Image (tube, rainbow, N blue to C red; front, side):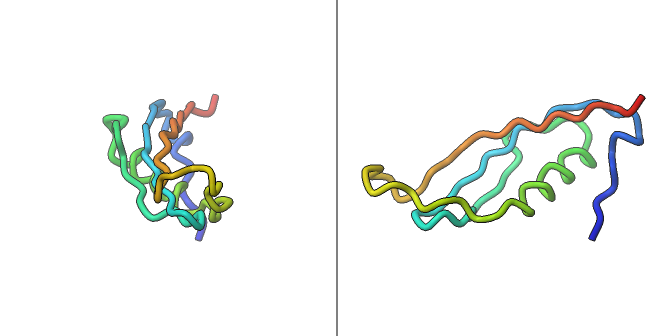
Length: 79
C-alpha cells in the first residue's frame, strides 16, 4: 500500500523513533520517543519503520540480548 506523502500538506516536522532489535536482527519494538506535534507525521514515521527489513544478527561480542537505537525522521514540505 502506498503511504500518503505528507510533504504535500506543507507541514514540516521531526519525529524521533526508538527501535529495538533482538539478537537475530528482528525489529521487535517501534515507538515514538518524541513526537512532531502532528499525529499524521508521527504515524507516517512509524509506518516507515514498519517497512524496515530485518537487521544483521547482533555480533557475538555484544553481550546484550537486544539493541535499542534512536532514529530521527525529518519532513520537509514540497516547494
